Length: 464
Image (tube, rainbow, N blue to C red; front, side):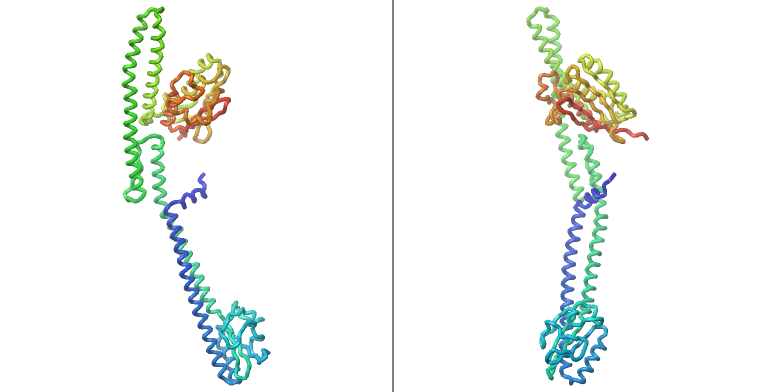
């Protein structure tokens, strides 16, 4: 089951998404700075216009006599219904006489510039305007009274609200298309990355003939794929040359060694049993046999590394193959006074070369019998561990393999510190590794000082 959170995380780690996100953040910040400056300039302009109107109005009212001033103040309130206006007339001692402003506002200076005051400090009660602040100014009249005028800042607040709404709409129009664009633009690169990933799987398994797909766009991914393909061409050529040299050396040396062994054998046959050199000839023949066995194993590994053998894969029943291995090695385990058991689930079918699979399992079982002391046990198992996965395991009660050596045992000629005295040339498990690699099986080693478990995870062939 695909994890949506993980899938989204992978999606937004893409370069295209990061660039879109970076540009989106840049445009958001730039838009906020631009609209913020417009907002500040507009409010500053409207506030200055309000202050100028208040100054003009109070200058005009001061020039009228008392009767005409009161009439003008009432008209001032009636005619400016859309923009709330209030006024208050106070005597020289600050006592209220007329108007909506019932108390001289705290903090207001007479005969000075207008100031912004909270509405509740200027006008209270049910007639207070629905605006947080008022622009207020006060001036002395010729008879010593003080006139206070208040003008709403609703226009500035409304314009500011419009600009803020425009800011949020602008952000949404920037971010939403950016997110959608990121999803759309990422589909192509992600699809190509999946194609490249699929193409690299055979290469990782050792098939250097595979190449990465190169499109016609000629963009960064195509250029990178072309560079990797050129590198693979060079690696394939070098690996082929090295492999050819090694195979030629093994093949060329095998022929003279075979002739030398034949000659030693003839000499041995012509010698009398009591001849003191007979034992020396026998040891030389044994050493030559050991060298020839190593050459044959090396050539065998080289043959297995040719992935063209996959063309001959057929459906193989793991249970039947394990039964054949069990029947072959049961007498050997009995001779070693060991208990060999077989456990296999039914219906485990894999695509494989039956001979190579038999050889790999035989090497594992033979290796387990070799290092298990008398009285021990060896188990050969094949169990289903998933809907389409089977696990083949050879477990023994031998001395075990130290954890730091478990990867090295698959290498050619590797022999652990405790196995130096054992017969062999250190290529048996290398052959197993080559067969597993050819079949795309995953090898692993578990266990402790009381035994070792060598296993292979296989992909099952599901019924049609």
